[in-house]
Length: 212
Image 1 (spheres, rainbow, N blue to C red):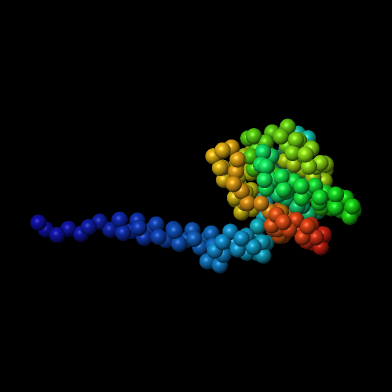
Image 2 (image 1 turned 90 degrees about the horizontal axis):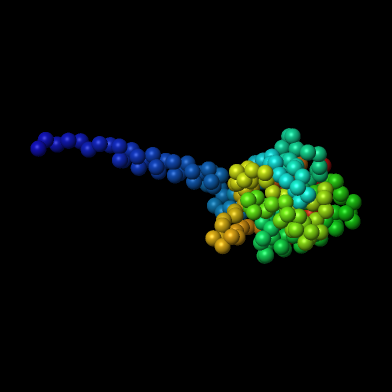
């Protein structure tokens, strides 16, 4: 039987997969410089590349609003933003208590209208206006200083979570496993810093130092 050359396509396909894998890893690690989510986020913040996209939302009063971006509604100069879902009994309740304290401090310091608070739900399908209002009442959130809101379109929220490097994974029991933190952003959505749950006071102090 005469010898026949084997088709080269399996080797070429494998090579293509390897090239794509390396390219993907390079992208995710910002050129092989950031190997953890925190390192990636800090590197993007330092580059000015961590920006929350404009998003249409509804707040605890059921009123539409637009956050971030060039066509945003007029509001504060800087924001402290956290990500929640209203049925959460752990991290989200702690964040609510922290924002309640910050709301009082913002008013006491005369920062009303300059530093705003935003609690964004990543579960808009179940966080209707009544649920947002109940969370707001529990933590005494007052408009316009503190907006408890959910996006109008869920795909927009998923895009925002990806851009913010926020992880929210369904636990299969109706809840979510998610990372908590306080994002300090400017009015256009550019993230200036991210603080851990326990460091919310430092987040506020950072915002005051960086007011335009």
